[in-house]
Image (cartoon, rainbow, N blue to C red; front, top):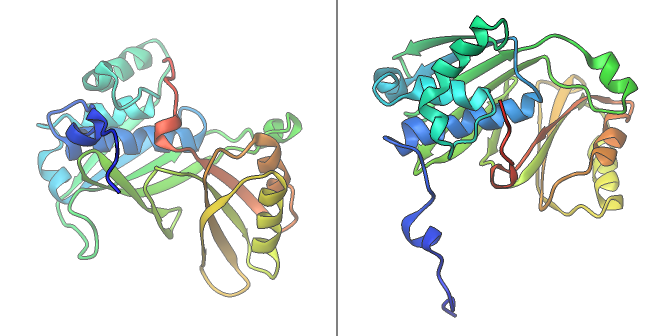
Length: 252
């Protein structure tokens, strides 16, 4: 049955800052989402552009886009092309963080032509966060992602684990010891919190070693539930991946 109404968004696509949806808007979305996953501004960021991005990142403003995203500036913000200038201003004031951008023209065969790696480093404060009842933030996060066109993105790898996340759904990444019952226990806690699971995937380095559980949900997961999951004995760390559409503007 055809829809009774069709939105302008569906006809024309999302509002994006150009000149390129893949080299500018998509890169900004990847950086913005990575900043949200990290939980705060990093102390240092290493950015590696591959393939097409490596060849054209300067002309398409990808450096500004990635700096703006890491500053917490939303992808639709007109300040997107001021990312490096804004970061330099903060650095001159003794704030901000360092960003090193490298262009890697050799693209691994299986990677998307518009691939980039973001590696963020922070200062450990996990003990204080645990005392405050919060999930400890990652202090070293490595994301490989693709800008797949039209502003759409895909997270391909997180801390060495292969994943497939679009940023359309809320998700949590549960790093844990590989043992029986972890997936069932995490699912039980989510069900008790009335959170519907949309999809799950599990990845491990080898049997009995560290593993990663990826859970996508139909809505946000309350901090209280994240804290319960973090408190399970086999759990090393829980990282939340918010849905891009639901992220609110964050001031500098």
